[in-house]
Image (cartoon, rainbow, N blue to C red):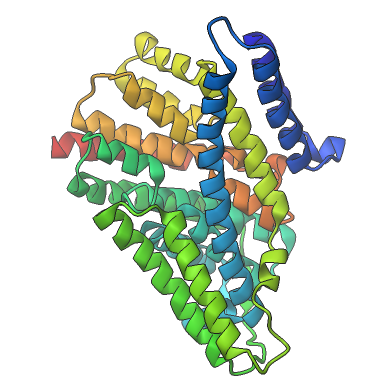
Length: 413
């Protein structure tokens, strides 16, 4: 049964890779194989497994998925409203010059995505950064380059603070790294982002003309934008100070958005903020559901835990690098959890390099991180195949950042 379940997971990932060939939406295939795998676990349980224990495992996985779904729904609703109101474009117009070279723009987008993801979660940072890129209305092949840059920059920025990446928070909570170590880790992470920006910007020669569009003066929209920003900041503070789950803070912020909208638009038939929930991309949510069901299945049958055996075959530094490569195929949260539970003996410097590796390694493939999946759902030009064309550039930047993390680790410890 283990072999069959692993085969199902392999076919599911293959269906994502071949989406452009088989012309079947990846949300449909992953949802099918994800639910099928758990049905088989119930119908053909392992020896010693009861329905109660299997149900308990499924409930645990569904709780994680539901938290992500609700968080995504809240964040995407905020962003959908801000996009419709043109508030994100307005912000861009105020920051960027009227005309800017595409090469310079690449570095500006990279810096924005890196910084913003350090302050917020990766999903929100990707949604906002991709909205920024799409608002510039460049041709598809150039938009693809910028989307690749956003995915890598978001993952790199998030890895250096416990507020930016779940795996960084997990390793920190296990007392493997300290806050000051992570702050220094942002240096090689930023260097690798700028290196990738230089590589991706090389063929770009044109200029982007930023033409402001007329927008009505919407005071309520500005208030809701302030609520969105306050929700992000509140999420960070409440999570660090009181351990409040980000999903709870974002749902609270969303409720305030609805109430403000009801009061502000009560005499205006043009706006019903609940409508924005209906226009978010449920393909993305269904894709997440299918992927996380598959990863949860692999975790429950022990496949992820067996990956820890890499540390028995390779030196610790080499194994940490390989973990980064594996995180482009396997969700880095259960992968990190398996490493922490295995009680692998490493120095603080080596834990720091692992933090970088599992946090950024998912950028190598579009399915390797939440940022990549969000980008693939938002940008038509981003597919598994089109993103993979830049995997060599991504690997170079990732390797440079990993080496930098080793240097920082050796200097600090």
